[in-house]
Image (cartoon, one colour):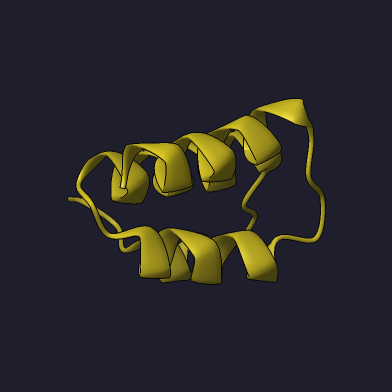
Length: 57
């Protein structure tokens, strides 16, 4: 059974980065940025995901 991202109790930086990358690759940069803003912890991959999303859009 698939879970909604919002229903995952303990999200780590990898799960956040995966969602941001996925939304960015499908052209939904607004949703990607919204998730990026909600992140409590960011790393280089987080920044690369959001910057890459903006570059591609």
